[in-house]
Image 1 (cartoon, one colour):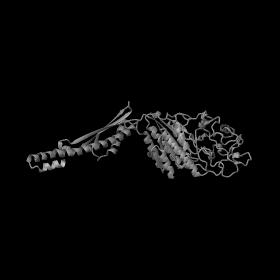
Image 2 (cartoon, one colour):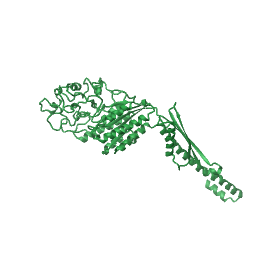
Image 3 (cartoon, helix red, strand yellow):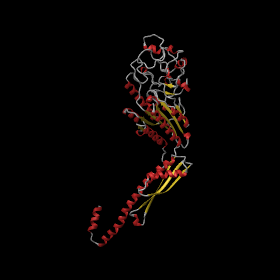
Image 4 (spheres, helix red, strand yellow):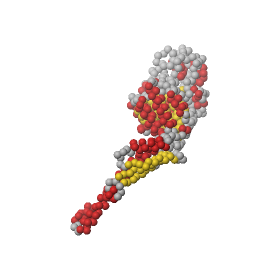
Length: 494
């Protein structure tokens, strides 16, 4: 239609038509040029909005700044995000603090020189924007589930302590209200340590009701009584995994349901004078040729002095630190971490969930699903899940899942790879369970060579972007710093 109209105009030789068309060219050209100027202005406004959003977030996440320092910080972010040479000249920057709403507002303008509208006497276009950030009023409950196994010794545990302290420092320094921030620590190796202050706690099966409590003793015995009968030996504070699915789930312990109770860690004395057993610390007393009979003979524990670590063999991790709002408490626990033992990631994750839980054994956490509380977990490992298989009556060394002979891990095999795969399966299930509770899961692999372990930990995180592979100490620090930044990030109100 337009092409036909133009053809008719061009063919029409009457002067008045040609004159009208010539007069129309001027406003048509100006309007076309004005569209270009307005497009430039809209681009400048979009860039201005991004720069002001970044500035508002920066100021809002630093609640203790003076007004002049806040203005300088905002200016620095605006310069970085709206550098000279971009379309428009930024100016009239205003920063306002709303103490009632606990908000920060940053506003500004950009002035754009026009190319075509100046022919109409409009030399500049001005666009404005305001960004408002509400400081997060949500509570944050964070648990760090950290690998404290033997492979973490030396510079690696030192780097981990430093990076973890930097995370706590970033969170506490940027916390507008420290009472709304709580951090816990779960060091893990082949098992976890709940602390000797919980000796004979009701949830630790003081009456030996749990099905696995007397599994390795004949006649049946109460582990607490065995600890009391041994000389120079006390319970080290470690616990064992419950039977599936309670091993990874937050099932509340209940004396009326014995399988939900936790069992104190007690590594049995293994047969004496026989090769391929790792933990013989008492003479067997009985002369039975049956190795299982010699191992489970209860009377050998009475009034005896174990050698080495005895029943606490494999209990190497430092105690769990429950949720606390005291920075010194969590930093002291981080500094006390040691490196020893083998890797059992699922038992660490399961206790990370329990630390965040509002129900026993730990009750400091808010209810899952509480709208005012963000629950987060950082899981770090430097290696593959591992349980040493043994070609003996037990099929393995003792761990948080007992002897493999007992079937608590779901497999009965002496093959190391089979055992590692079983632990991987429980790790995957534990991560899925944590995510199902609304826990924001971050994962870190630290100098891990295994591609399958890296893939597992990536899948464990709440989102692939929340997984960090750290091949060096510096990369580890950056991972913790990024997690701190994500946790302190504030939402834009508009």
